[in-house]
Amino acid sequence: MAFADGIKALAELIRQSKHCVVFTGAGVSTLSGIRDFRGKNGLYRQSGADTEKMFDIDVFFKDPSVYYSLAKDFIYNLEEKQPCVVHNVLAALEEKGFVKAVITQNIDLLHQKAGSRNVIEVHGSPLVHYCPKCGFKMNFDEAAGIVRKGGLPRCTVCTAVLKPRITFFGESLPADALMKAEKEASSADLLLVLGSSLVVYPAAALPDFTLRAGGRVVIVNDQPTRIDSGACMRFDDLGTVFDALEEIFR
Image (cartoon, rainbow, N blue to C red):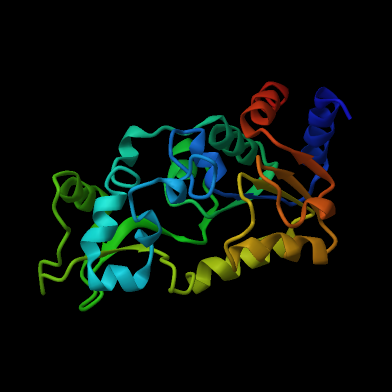
């Protein structure tokens, strides 16, 4: 099928869907200038840096400065990042009633910045930093200001280093968010998988909920995924696809 015909068919799927849900991964964020993890230029392929330790919970509790030094230019400069065409189109599609929910693995807050309202963050969010010892909380802006100056955000009660409410490797996903995501994926008659290679579980299993319930899955990702053969449509380039959808739904 020619690209133009494929895009028209995708737009029609979205229009005809009664419960369209979107699942986004790091590939969406790369269009906003945020590096992904496993892509060809991903953080985990960066030489000379222990980037895989960034979200290791054992490393964090031994030496939280490892996380903050590696994340300083990745998470704590989010005010400089702007939503890309994917974020903006999804927000517009929600406003028009076509998209019912956005489930995201991303922790960059860009879906909300674009205007999406029903966003389920299955890997947590940096909006809140909390004390693992006494529960003291600090908002993102205050924590980010400290980190950008080279410091560590600390509890004002017990002086422990604060942890962002992001799910690190070795931690369970937030139960409430995961439950909501599974419910939305099961209810979806159309699930758009955008910019995710579907390798990080349990979130990567969400498309299976849609397929088991009889819904259809569309994948837009520059790398193969394990469910490509089960998708009703597949595209490689997010930017090209959403530039085209933006024109159609304008």
